[in-house]
Length: 426
Image (cartoon, rainbow, N blue to C red):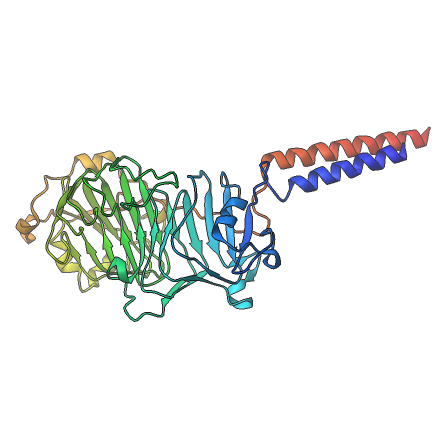
């Protein structure tokens, strides 16, 4: 009986141990990555050597993390083979260890693209640019550049003012960039939403929608949030480089200590559905429906500005007020909760706000007299909650089936122990 008992207990322990570190399909929740890595990714000493290997080692149906634990260099364009339903986070801080400090970890980029096929987050990571450009293509997947991200370049032209001189983020599709490696090109028509949130980093350029897509016809909501200490050179709210006529609803949220050099419509003439700017704090250098060559991006259902008293002192505020048909002063997010909700908890833009908008007027006819009278409100409309980051703990979330296995093991062990003790009493 004793021998059988020991064998049973060992079997249950092994079964439970095998279930805890990995998911049912064998994918991990965290892997380590650095140049020259030849291990299985289970630790910094056994790191993987390529981003493709890191993605392959994760269970992409869940939240996964890739820890850059030394220098890692991306060569050319990275694109995972297929869309995934979970999320991937890149970081250099894990389980209390900051590998930027202990191993000089950094993400080295000679120039190229990072194509997202699922939710993507960057947090506590140093980007070192060897060239003057880099482009993250979201493809309508949520992208979050969270806190603790540093972006620097050896090239003096790196400025955040053009896609060729910036750390670029494109919320939609890029022409010529396959959606997956089977060669399928991006669709010109879609109602999928877009979400880009930037909380740190500098020399960033954001394109809210698509780039170089012929006759784009997008109708979802594109939400771009710039907050924290982020520094953005240019933010384009419309499709880029081609004429367009689409119904995309654009919501721009600016808060924290963020700084945006200029907000432009696009680089070609066209129309979008609507534009809402929630300016709660931070700096905006200027706003223009057009780009530098005067091609206007008109909003069919109007331009709305929600602002706080904090931004009224911004040098560009008075001029920006003239560009919006509706302007509404809202309570500052720093005030008590009973007066206003924090920006991150506000509800998405409602249908009523879209349908109640005044008819769009051509930008050149806008003047102080055409501005909607100032009204009071408790919160800006159209603010969408920021993307939730993937879990960042040492142990990570444990699937329910693991706890079921542990429960069965404990119950079985207790039953066996009970039988042994009962037999001894006899």
